[in-house]
Length: 99
Image (cartoon, rainbow, N blue to C red; front, top):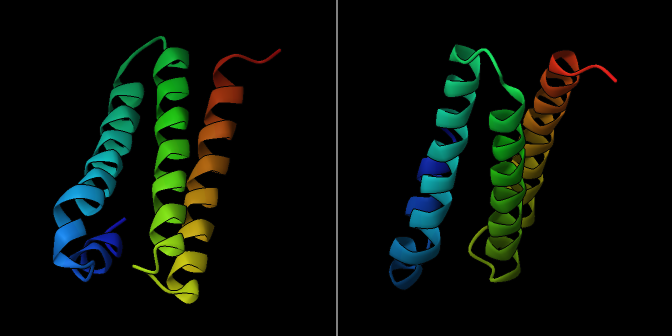
């Protein structure tokens, strides 16, 4: 998620501290949830929360593209990385509660 910070810094000044800050905070929330899940015995609720946070980040990134704060190429890269993290979270969740 290091690639996201310079992208957000290029948002228009009026949005950098609104949408940009929400994107950065959501990214940090996801990282925190994954660290917490790694430390806890019962990971399922925390992983579910991380998945919801990832969905929220996905929507914020899509909104940034729709508002033309990021171009299609950067959006594609972001979507690919977010989907990759989503697959990892899904696998981790399935390994915790096999049904």
